[in-house]
Length: 301
Image (cartoon, rainbow, N blue to C red; front, side, top):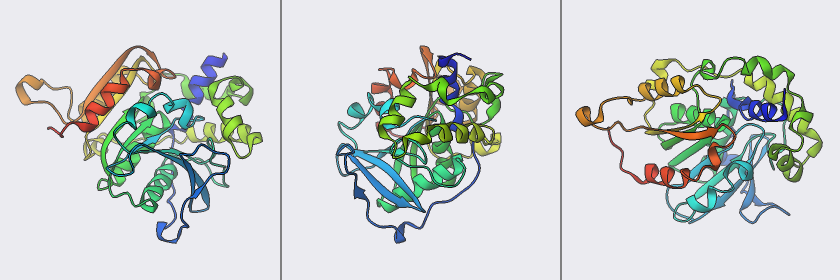
């Protein structure tokens, strides 16, 4: 397996899932500034997890929550996007358990737990309603939040998502068994972790936990996807790890893939970025206009 393949696999590992819930926000202490961290960064205590998050842009208004991909963090996935999005909207970017500035705790990595942690953080911050953008694993977390917290989630932007592990190209999960931490050395994932993590020596633990997570990826039935209340923008690269036929079926389940001239536009949208791989999708400049346009538009359908 090449380093590029290892990084691509790593970028999908957290797309898996099982259970958990966050702590009661009413019993959590006030978030505290981080010594030596960027000025926008703070910690919040969420059920034994010291969860790192950053706030950017205006202090009021419906926030946009950013959820990074597997083995990654805020800066590698959203460093180019945040300055654009935060020009006129409140942005809350989160780093999940064992990622970036957020140290690991003694429990597995699971999509449902990450969704519960993120929901608990937003409750603690007094957020009543938010838009949520998730990339890769973060898209799985965002989807879980949209399904379980319809009153909290206003709109969803799912970048490189899948609702069923069968949506990945064949062989990716099987190849994951051979992924070793050393294969990711020198990648942006590893460099960011070494610079940001409270315990840099835990990188190997993060990789192993992510391998386990990928094997527990949640499968949402079609009827569950059809029940999603929030409008969704699906974004995928044309050479992503997710199959294009899976994305078009995802779009169909959301009410898309129709003749809009006859029946009207659906409330959800689909963007396929040309010449784009999984690792490159959040760095495409098209997102700088596509995402704000979707978030700012009135819901249709």
